[in-house]
Length: 129
Image (cartoon, rainbow, N blue to C red; front, side, top):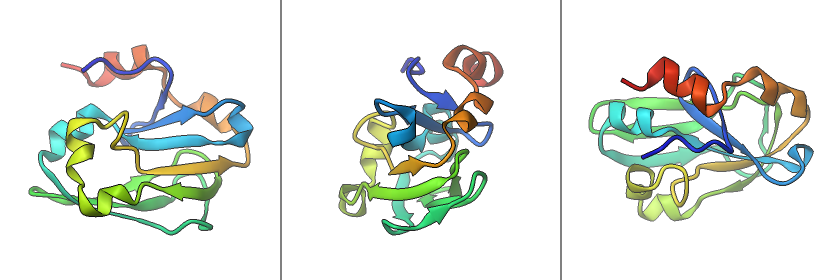
């Protein structure tokens, strides 16, 4: 699966996709690389809507057959939506991590923080084998 060019990427393997004006928000999920490393995701637990997050803080966790992993936001903001469909069917993270497998949407406080993240070419150069 190609790494989408319209997202920004963190070293902890989360993607952040600006939605329209970056100040209005980003959608956040985990990369295909992370899905491959974790293997089968079996459980997703995100913090509730309204939770304020600072860059570098956890927005929740995913569980796989291998491990439980925290999911981090690289931007400061507030959770405005959680993908509740994943509670019943976490497999969407495995099959469509950049689409139906999104985790949370954030209203961000500082759009400039997105510039600290890698673009798809830099992420692929660092993590694709």
